[in-house]
Image (tube, rainbow, N blue to C red; front, top):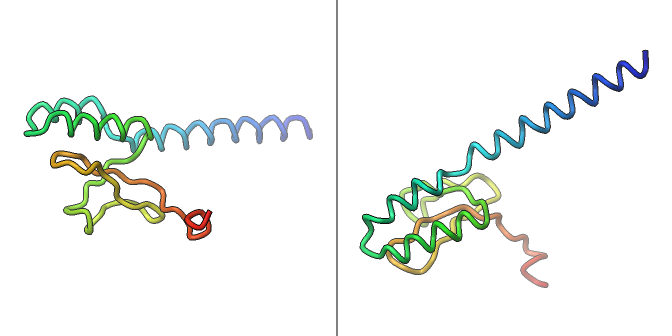
Length: 101
């Protein structure tokens, strides 16, 4: 009986962990679609570099209206490249302790 309960709990854990990973992955932007939109930007190189940076870090796209009006979830802040056609993405906020090191 204990083996059956342990097996069921283990299976439940595996299914739940897989679901959470899929859910997180589904929040990520379609980097290829973003790169395609870069072809219409005035600074294609800047736009493409921001897509590469976002994809490398597996960051979420910040869809807020401005850098100060961010759509990033709690615990995240907006980031971008310092060029005109850069996308904005959400990065984890560094704690005060990490900033002192």
